[in-house]
Length: 91
Image (cartoon, rainbow, N blue to C red; front, side):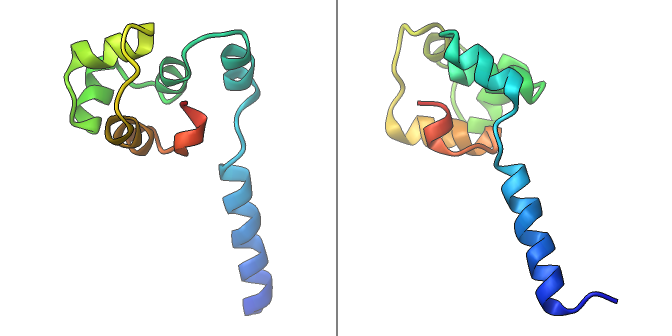
């Protein structure tokens, strides 16, 4: 049976793996695609589903994804939270 130190180490590894950006996401973002859209599609969320989860309108989210609007800091934080990514991953 593992001791507490081994369990903590295993949990730390699991957390760090969970924070890695998938290669497919990195390639698309590095190619210039909008990171919000890339992460949304990676999470298999619809535009409507992400907008609802972030508490914003679908049209507003669409404008953010197409670059017509930047999105306020509070909205981007809500989107990042709904996507379960760091804010840095989508800005």
